[in-house]
Length: 624
Image 1: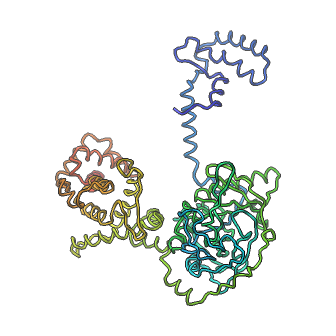
Image 2: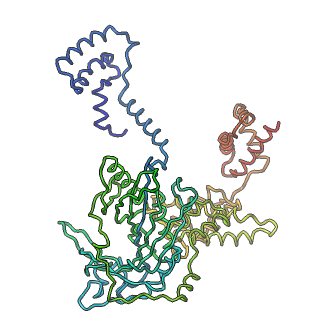
């Protein structure tokens, strides 16, 4: 049982609810403990004692039937827990998306590290796992006389991202200096593209299947104001004794900053936007290390205003910096929205400021006042010329752009028969490697089926593509929870081209082929999959099935019919429900199927065939 809180115990004792089972004086428990409660309510001690004495005499004359029975503490706490759980279930996830009478407005700035081997303005390598300060050029630490040299290769992933975001690529763009003084910026300014970025006026559409808030309907389009190139700062390493070390390997690493229009009005939609941007950047090979690896960070701008007056300007915005998970984006927006509403309703004024957020907290915290354009003293960088892009380069990149996630999703749903949820999971998992694994497995299954079946009896493609998708998402996922043996970490390692070290695509395709053709049962298939994962399968899948005699020897049609009759025998009440129903009792049907499985030789029964046999029996019953 959970620990009892001090407040709960105090309330229980002081409100006169204490009783002991088997205690002869339990009937007088309420009277005995009443003075304590009165004392806490400000009643004087003498008056309280006299009141208690009088109440004791009255209580003795009162019949047992008129007394309120004392409720044991354990029972009371259990009832309160059940009530809280019930109320929690009633509360939908969408409850936190809106606040009556208020409109939330959110804009987002995403900083993504580009997938390049060189820094933006120096030939130093971009490496995050090597020894600190081992990849630092003179310009990175602003040594006197050092000059910036644009590394042309960094432009390619940046341009791919802008094209994927439907931006207008600017043929001429320029770099600016953003001045501020902090230890992670040795030059005293950051080189960025504030005034003339290389990409403008883009957009991205979020759909219901992406998981946006229900209030946004089927889709919402978020405008991209601009995408700009800029350099990252040094990495601060906190040490004991209020000491910080600096790793300049990261300083000068190329970033793109994606700045949205303030088009989002629900926290979940904002979080979905960040997730989709991360997926998009990974797909076009712009940013391959996501938020969990520190390769992508989000700053959110939050403001609120009262609803009902469309002419009212947007409220004063605050910025929450460096959100590093999708959940943090949603939680931080909710916390800041609620804080601003409380402040305004209390008569306060929202200050434009930069705030922080810690995972697991319920409040944002003030970091500093909000800097403006004047504070940063933006100016054109005199050491870097304009960035000029040719039409031929842009057209070539547009033609060679990878298939974007929305197009891939449509294909998986329409052509492969997957649900929207499963299709999205395939694309998101393992930075897109899981969907490549799916294609490899399915291609092998298709070849084996083509060799097995004649053209006239060829099974429907979607019937085994959905089977493959289900196993690759769910059954492989269950393997990662297996905590025994040499793979206690529960990892699955996928390569970019779609191969898995623990479960090779060839092994899984053979397994699923035999399962689909009903050569083995689902139970046997799962046992074989676990053996493959643990490296305990000697030889191939076919050899293991042969060696252990795991082939499925299905019972005959007559034996299925006999099992059906045996299962429904004595179940007249259940069978009557299939005659009188308003809504088909699916649960009762599956219960009867389960009974069939228990009565017969489970290893020789196909659940789908058993279900069909029982459905036919029920249909005959209703027809009569």
